[in-house]
Length: 74
Image (tube, rainbow, N blue to C red; front, side, top):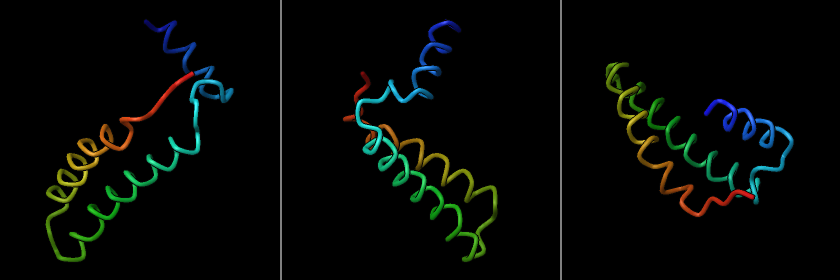
């Protein structure tokens, strides 16, 4: 199992794992931006930190599979 992970990591850093890296980074940036907004905006509205962290984490974790559903590897 570790050997597969190590091989995938080497291919990723060489740029040979992802078929369309621009699409991958674009979708990841969209998900991270939404998560960051959900973390920062409620803090300005004086919500407790623990609640904003939970809200942001759950929403981002739920959203990422939908954003990356068309993700293809080589």
